[in-house]
Image (cartoon, rainbow, N blue to C red; front, side, top):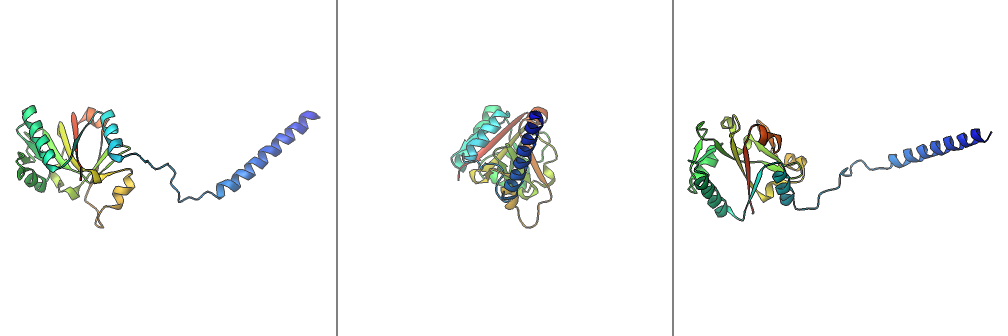
Length: 194
């Protein structure tokens, strides 16, 4: 008979544990974050993620350093210039002595602005709000993206909350890793400190 009483005790313990668990689960507040927020610097997190995925992170202290690095890279790699994906970006680059064309298929180095960057995933968000429109029809072999440190976030939610009332026509998420292996051969992210 001892087997039956042990079994009953075990079943009673399990039933009580389940009843107590239900009470605890019902008191959990659902509006709390499920994941622990990241306390590290989002710029460093992104730089590490991008580097692990095969991308190249280029830090610039200011805009002058950005233009210097873009010019030096074009000279070093013997590029004739960059393919800007918006007329505003093209004008901006040209006003700073950077050779930039607009949608020239013979130029295999593209450069774009971005809406934001999600540091933990290494995702770069580009939207039609940056003026890319129909000029970004395919990825070039070498893609460069310019971002400010204030555009690096820890979640997609933060970027979506900053979107304008009128949503952009399209949203593109470039994630390093497989994309670099399959379409883009080299991905450079120039981050300018503000």
